[in-house]
Length: 314
Image (cartoon, rainbow, N blue to C red; front, top):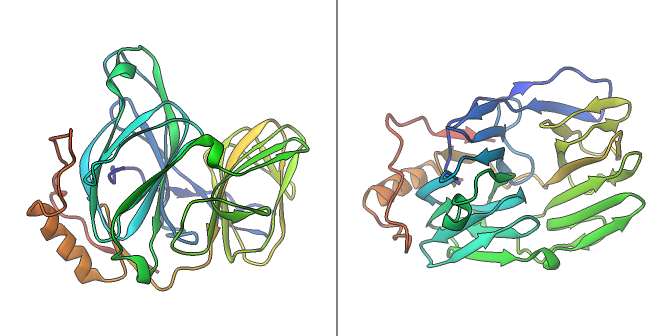
């Protein structure tokens, strides 16, 4: 997804749990019938492990004929990770990929030295009034070693994602390793990303296996050491503490994080790099149509005007 304008997140209240280092409360922004909540980057926290961008899309119900329309746009230096709870998105990219994504599946696109893609609601679904869309779009910064790798795309069906279940919990390991399971997704650095559903009263541990850990609450209420959190909060934990997440009601959330990145990252629009001059090159490449076209999608998103500043995220 292209970097859409969104309200900056606001800091949450101070909580009693010492393990919670930062509470980020994304503010909703309506992009014409489609709501986005941005948790990363924020003033309080720019990255969690390799996660440098984290947007909640929806939930939304589209009018007849309407849908998501993210026109072709470029990326460098990152992998995009699209994960849906409801709805469907059609992905097209400059490699010639055409792939629908549905709930429980995973689209993992590696931009590397450069790729362009679009994301749209399929035509058939636009003919159905009340078509829904709800999910998370995140960007994972690539390691310095992999920043200029060849672009690629991988799709994983729901049955390919490892599952941990029992005692009122269902955990789907989307990427990386956690709770003794490892996703088939090839990542650029040590990380974890998991979709967790808990029945009321059930609990799941978040052990200190990685220095940077967070959860993003999707639905229901969670109890962490006596503090209660509702939906749409990003909770970033201190390193080294053993965390137990307990559900007060049926709840769903995402666990994410990894090891600290191998140095700071610059981010501008849809570009991420460890080198500021690489961002400037990517701008020129998009202006000169050097990213390649997206077959079947003739539109494109121009560079932002006026240009925002390049931001450095340590």
